Length: 133
Image (tube, rainbow, N blue to C red; front, side, top):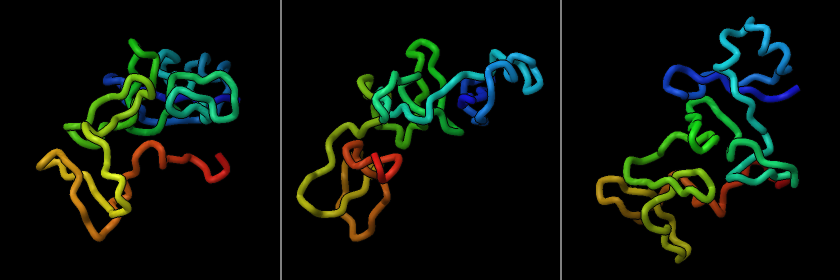
């Protein structure tokens, strides 16, 4: 079994299933060309278990498949954020301050603002898909 992402006419992922390639090829789930294999263990262009990465990131609903890059890109969180081609993910135009305080991204000023509340947005070095990785 493998993971496959169904993309719509805009290449946006609308569904992810665990299914055999042969079943996709039957057409029972629609046009087989709308289903693209993805790897649950691929994140930022690396396979977390040491295998071969597939399409830069595991596809999630709302991700976009970029055929030119052969990559699944997550939704862009803010208009000002830029695509980091090395990891195929969106990054703020400036690094978050590293002074122990809590910051959130403020799109109005396109900069980090200090806050007392955690926004939940983490820089990539703090991202983890699973606590065992």
